[in-house]
Image 1 (cartoon, helix red, strand yellow):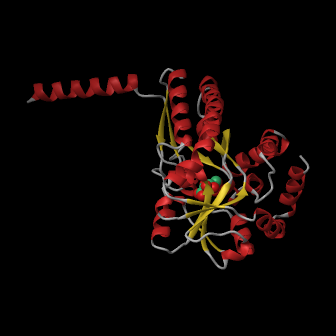
Image 2 (cartoon, helix red, strand yellow; image 1 turned 60 degrees about the vertical axis):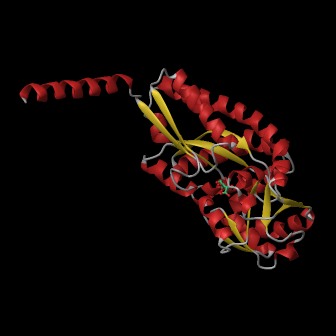
Image 3 (cartoon, protein in one colour; image 1 turned 90 degrees about the vertical axis):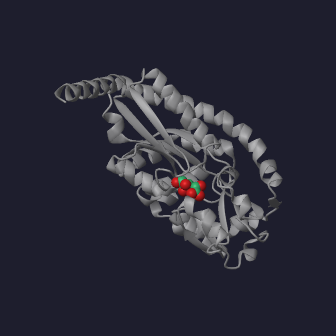
Length: 322
Ligand code: 2Q2
């Protein structure tokens, strides 16, 4: 028995030893809300590949799609507590950092160029700085998003058609205020709960870029895509500041370089995806509805301005002038 015990201990020590040799020094848990096929997930996997190769295995990246690490708000909290490390997040950060609201203001950005000028210029820097200061999350890459569209089970062409429509919005106070002013009844809710809530008719509608409409299979519970184009926005890939700074400089550089390569990679995927999405959703049976966007924009504008704080309104005007 003693011999067996010793043999067992030796095997245990060998296993422990090999683990010590092969285990990474740092593990990054990266959770997001899109599905496996979504371009955000493809970008995350690209990041994983680059980081693991370029760190010679000293960093391991674990990617969790489909809110497997929890809802967007949960993962933000987990990163702050140190139990998760990375996610993809944007205007929901306004709950901590008010300037993050500017990432997704209804009908503010004229086009892609206007959006890019904002993100890459001084306003973008200001937003990123406040996000880091107020949340402990560091933006390391940004992705443009397709415009947000309404989905519903009856066609919506003008704000009057909304008529108390029960609509889910993300945890974004500015979206709640705007949809209320437009004449709908908005409820904030985590993304993963939307499908079931639509199925059970506790809500009747939701709004998202085509990419996430596809990702969450909303075609199975919604008939119409009402082309409101009501929000152009971008989103950040963020990493916990404490985690990032716990790494030696060379590994921090590996993470930052991989993030910037992931950003270019995603940009290519995004352009191709935008050309594909409308037809893909039509093929799944969704009907696209032409919307009086001007009527939506005109009705939204006073509500948006009213909802913004003085500091936010200053940024709003600054962005308008770009
Ligand atoms: O509907 C959603 O949950 C996403 O499209 C949100 O826009 C996104 O999660 C943001 O609120 C980003 O912070």
